[in-house]
Image 1 (tube, rainbow, N blue to C red):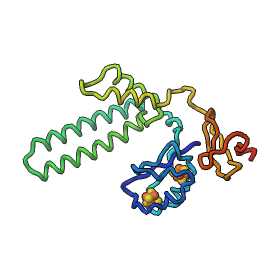
Image 2 (image 1 turned 90 degrees about the vertical axis):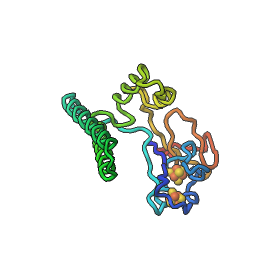
Image 3 (image 1 turned 180 degrees about the vertical axis):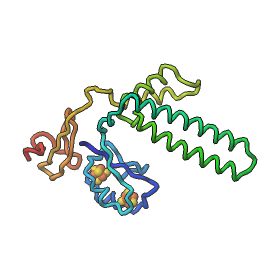
Image 4 (image 1 turned 90 degrees about the horizontal axis):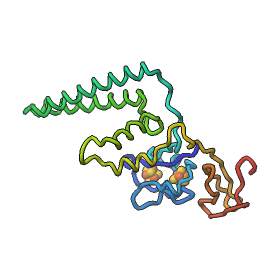
Length: 210
Ligand code: SF4
Ligand code: SF4
């Protein structure tokens, strides 16, 4: 399964170890975001990072666990109630002149929001792979809920989401570079080229034959 490295900037102490070990230079960026075009998902940076700031995320998520419509309906009803509770906490906070109460209500609203998000994930909105997410985004695109709704961003997001049940399940093939020895994964259909030394063609061996 093809993976990409991502860096959590809040944990990163900027000691630059990942820059030294990365075979492709993907971590050496001006904006501190690991370059997805260069990352081959080898995981060397994550192993080297002393702060646990780098994680590897799969490019294609497995399907969400199946749940019956009844369970999904109950979870969504529960999430709706929690949303109402969050709104009530915010109303109380806004109406109060006591700072302590405002802070308490802000904390209650945030904690309720976290539970709601968790419940909604369980109810079928486990980003980004589930069809429910695409359905709800398509509905928002058809009927934007407010004049300043960011439609352009929504369309860009829709373009990146996998089509449900679509043909997006491409096989992953690992290659070993016969020139520099790097092992790197590629998704079926991509043109093999070593990300380190640029070798192509018969210099690259599919891993099962390497
Ligand atoms: S996973 Fe490998 S290629 Fe990607 S940033 Fe880390 S060391 Fe570099
Ligand atoms: S090795 Fe970890 S802590 Fe060091 S610069 Fe890289 S991400 Fe940051």
